[in-house]
Length: 325
Image 1 (cartoon, rainbow, N blue to C red):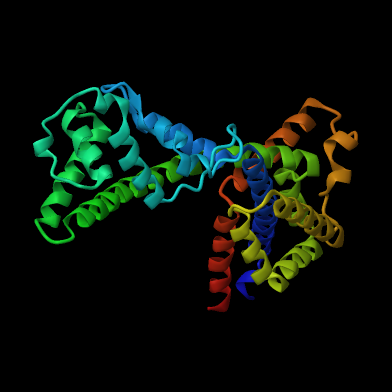
Image 2 (image 1 turned 30 degrees about the horizontal axis):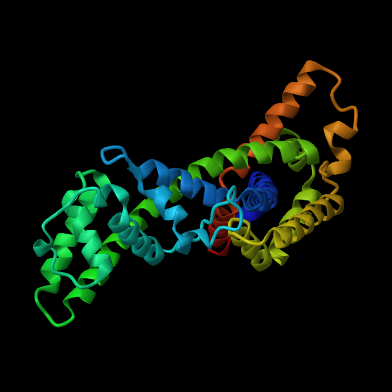
């Protein structure tokens, strides 16, 4: 008897496939909400405003960056800031806003110590000489010292200094984006759980009921596994897209198509899933026990969905690797 012929294994694979399909649907719904609310842009602005709030010098450098024309042009709605600020644009804008800051020009400095013809570098060096050493300013002072050392007294000295400063700030911004991405993933995991639970209630994707279904329905298990095996490549591509930024219209279309896929599979396998089987459209709750089972089952599905579709399809890929051995 092969591994996949064991009832326990086929039961587990069937449940994972359903969770994976639900994770795709929930992922698309989450991305649609994120697009509508400009969630990534607002999240980036929030954390930049927090990280770049220079209390020592009384300036929020992120605020000046968002007000700068080159970044402001990327924002169509003041309530929906852009989330597409490149590292290079961020670095170039920061160099300019620090150099032109009012706080820097309030202080005079010996001009003979500033041996640059470039207006940007002249303003920047002046600012780094007079501003107090906060986190942001110290980072830029260190970068400027390294840039000047690398440039030496060569023919293209000023260009080298500028380019090295841009690279230095790009590196800082890249590390910030990595940390921000980690913060955003944690927030997304919570949202996927909440959305997955709500969608499970609406579509009656009760994991406790599903365990009972796959345990007593061998033909249904075969239909679910057969569907996955026939559509592996398409489903894996959908799993990746469900976590990728796309236009709102495309996401709406993907949501409708995925909902239809799940309902069609439910009908072919005679599963107790679908909007027509929702607890809100039937009298399934007749006791407190029914209510508890319903909530626990939906939460279990939501918890599974919170791992994201790629996680479940990666697990399925590993399971099928064992099948080939």
